Image (cartoon, rainbow, N blue to C red):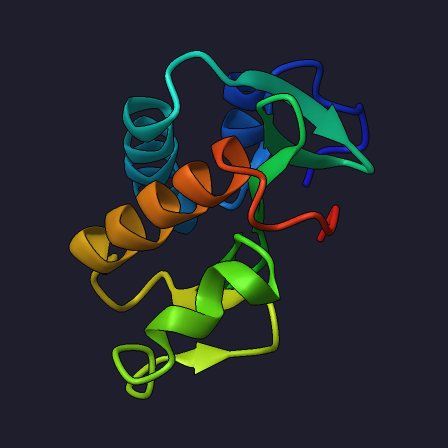
Amino acid sequence: MASQRPATIADYIDAAPPAGQPHLRRLYALLKSVAPEAEEAIKWGTPFFIEPRFLFAFSAHKAHLNFTPTEGGLDPFRKALEKHKTTKGMLQVPYSAPLPEALIRQIAEQRVQAVRAREDDAFW
């Protein structure tokens, strides 16, 4: 990432590794379509979507991106995520692999519904 801190998500993507920018732009568009009214912010150097609580975030790395919908956001999809590298609350997608757009959309939609229904009281 560039040494100057990005002020917007577009700036963040422009500063990301060139190999990842197409994935990041598609991910950003997908998340924006799922949560069009969410506040967008750069917090701790990472793009966040907030409505009014944390919905999800993503981050760019040298060879992959991370999509972070929280542990509770990923739990219902553990079976579908078996083919992907994950942590408790994060999906990692290498830039060399296709972005699993349909799966990410499902996870993001479920996360938005859970937050709006206040089913997930945890920030993360």
